[in-house]
Amino acid sequence: MTVAAAVKTFADRIGRIEVSATMAVAAEAAKLRSQGVNLVDFGAGEPHFPTPRHIKDAAIVAIEANFTRYTVVPGIPDVRKAIVERHACDFGSDYAIDEAIFTTGGKLALFNTIQVLVDHGDEVILRGWCEREGYPRIGFGECRGTVLPANQ
Image (cartoon, rainbow, N blue to C red; front, side, top):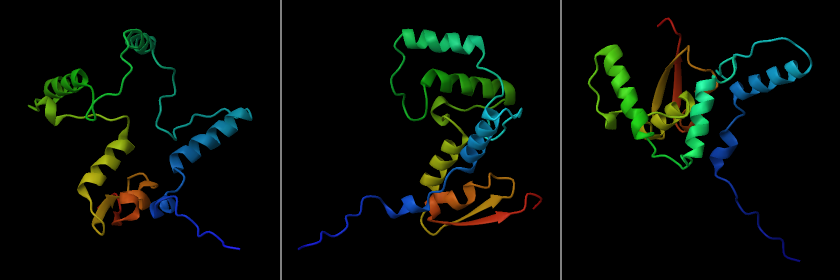
């Protein structure tokens, strides 16, 4: 009888990915809420109020207009233009649209930035106020993270 060798299915880095502390807090809050506990959940950084009506209406209009496809990686050009214009109005900046990007959230923005700037073995220095779960995840553990207290 011949025994087949195990086939490697996933990359080694998958074993270094931990459960998101943010999502663990959100899950615990949902569990407590289901048990009748009255609480405010700040875990995921989401607003504590329902999506405003004008945003819901705009989303429905976009769906009805078939604005439902993937967008370019740096974001929808009209939104990037609006970001550049608002930044110029608020701060007197002079950025071009191709210098502005937006993402679905801060973690994705940081992840993308680290992926293009940090190589295996590099050292990343983080301030102590950064989200704790991000420390071991910097570059999927392929670089060294040094944490400085927030007061330094």
